[in-house]
Length: 112
Length: 114
Image: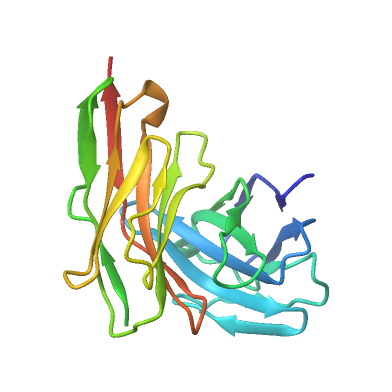
């Protein structure tokens, strides 16, 4: 049972480049979410999804897009990377929104 | 907007002793959930303990227990018989039962001294 899998683990981008952070879970969880972690800021919610085809914004959604075409996958897209998006990104999933959230191992992203 | 405050950026404890990490939150909701997560140097986020607001009894998981004071909006974590493996960043988090948005505090870095 792999749990929540994030790829890649590390990524370096140049300003203006685009990329997709992948997140997949094999627990048949309905709820999935993306957070970013910055020093001294804790984790902040970017976007979340309560099921396939349904997404909503979190606390810091600007500069990021998401979609949820399947229950298993919840990719996070950066259309034009900016240095302010340098951060560690975590994906999480839970059976329902109020259940325990299980986190992936994180992706460390640097935008130069 | 809900906020979660952890007033202790860093704490230290001697191995085998007890330490308490503080957390306060601000909300007008009656239906909500509180969590403590642990993040060791590996960066993995691990759930330590969970408390439903409607439950008066404090949650306990082995050496970890909480002191949930609903009226004071306080949710502290007590770690008994501290072990070297408890060294980590600890995050307090809050979620309402209506919008599923998890709000984190800024964290407390716990050092365990041998």
